[in-house]
Each structure stands twice: as structure tokens, then as C-alpha cells.
Image (cartoon, rainbow, N blue to C red; front, side, top):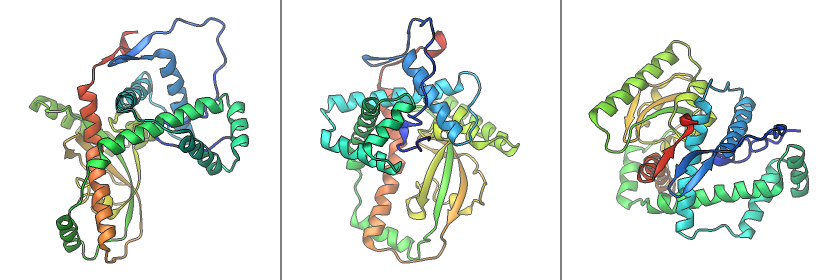
Length: 319
């Protein structure tokens, strides 16, 4: 029995079986330094194995060579920065919250906590290891809440304007995926030009038949790269503002031209649409839609900001 995926971001494919232990264990090495912390090659190898398992479960072919290693390490670097921020802010996850989350994960897999622990053991994991992964993920969410979501405000004037512009807002929801070609903070004209050129080249590859998910795993700078760029379902009113005019005009399966944002250039694919009837929004619904849209707009930019402000020594290609 294979446990289904149950938590995003850091916990992708946590249930992958452990490889057989080699008779000779090579010396470990540092693959990245993030401020005062180090990420070891053994840690990266473990996460790469988990990512491969997750991609396989989604029927996505892993990219060749070191592309997957680079993507996984990039996620680990960002996570490490966020966890350092959590430590500096004295954030913590109490046992009650952690136990509740663990029981919820087990329930989502149709298991009791004891059965969940047994399944983990059969697949080479322990309940303690999973608890630690969940704790880290909850800390990251706390950091994102305190640094991004808690600073987003919605005024009455914004709600009024939103309701005026969306008096008959579509009830449609869109299942989206993206490939992001990032630009650094305060980029030079050459850096913007290079990113735009890469985005246009990727778009041409897609037009020539390249697989979107595989290309996202190999090339996207977005947090969802290891999920094939999948952004999930978004109500029309909560689509990031830079996509709001483009997405409704896409046909199912179509990929947009590169869309410029402060974070870089986005290639957005419309995977599926559901619901299309009009309906009047309440003020509460409008306020929530504006709030979520603002959070979506800010999160990628914030991630790039904290990365730019950290000391990072990526040694992956040196070993």
C-alpha cells in the first residue's frame, strides 16, 4: 500500500523507500552554505530521492543530469532561510498543534495514527522523522503568515471598487500551472533581457511539443517547480492580478506568452476550467478575494527578497 501525497512544499513524496545501504559509505560533503547553516550532500540525496518518487507518482519524467538536484537544492535553500527566520523570531509549534496535524494526515490517508506509523515503517520512515518534517513545514507557514499575509490589508474603498468592476463576477475557477523565469531584485537591463529571451525560448519549446510539466521541473524558478509547476485551482477573483486578464482568454491546454511581473517572466498554462455562471459577490467574499490575490502577488516577490538578502554559497557543481 502506498500512502498518497499529503502535504505540499517541503514534504513532497516523504514516503519514498530508503535505498539499500552501501557497503562503503562515502564521506559527506557540504553542497550549500546558507548564512550560518550547511546543507549536506546526504540531505540533498535524500530529498532528491523523495522528489523522484513524487514525480513518478504524478507520471512526470524527471529531468536529466543535475537539473533535479539543482531544483531540489534551491527549495532546500529557501526553506533553510525561512526556518532561520522562524528561529530568530522565536516561533515554535506546540505538541498539541503537531499532534492534531499528524492525526489529520493519518486520517487523510484513511488510517489511524498507529496504522500510519506502521505504514511509514514499512516504507523506511519513522513517525519521528515525519513529525520533524511536519514541524518544519508548519514553522515555514508561520513565517509566511507573519511576514506576508499578516501585512496585507484590504480597505473599504478597495472592496467598493472591486464590486463595481466585478458586479457580475464569473464563478469560474481555473486550474493553472506556471513556469517562472526569475529576475534578481533591481535587475540590470541585460538581466531582464536574458530572462525574457529564456522565457521566449521556453515558450517556443512548448509550441514545438515539449512537455510542460517536465520543462517546469527542469527550468522553472517557481516554488511549484517540483510539482510540474502546478498552481492548483484558483477562483477567478483570486487569480494573481498579473494573470487576471490573460487566463480567461486562454483555451484549455493553452500556454500564455511570457507575462512580466516584478519576479520575472511567467508562462501560464490553463489546465482546466469549471463553472462559468455569473453571480453577485458579497462584501465579505470580495474582501477575501482581494486579500488572497494580494498574498499571491506578494509571496513570490518576498521569497526572492529573503533569498537575495541571505548569504548563500552554492557548491553543488563544485563537487
